Length: 167
Image 1: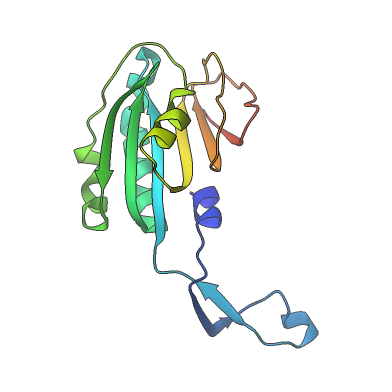
Image 2 (image 1 turned 30 degrees about the horizontal axis):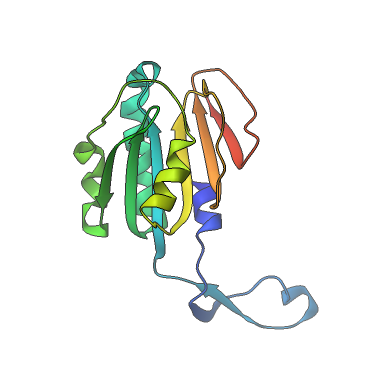
């Protein structure tokens, strides 16, 4: 949640309460910047067989990210060796997002299909969060910031983006 929040912080509005802390030690009072909402957030969920047991936890985390970051929309992409499903949620659905998720797929594991799908569909996400167990053939080539949330104890090092490990 912290990574997505920091990355998606907007700056379309300014205010002096609270002031910008960067120049405060030098006695300069500047406004802080904020945004009411960010663009689209993509959460890409691995649907390989080893992921099934952790979906309840993942679904709750997706709901919390959506409510905290307040994006214009959350797109959940279900993938295995190809993209198998795509669901889009708007802000009025964020409180019930965990019950609305419908996983699709169940084959191999190739996350390179995700950036290809994003490019093909001409999506413009602020960032992409990939939920996987880390047993992948390759990491793909990404044009957007990507966070790998790797579950299940295996701790590979992706060659692109940032990785966090969920035990």
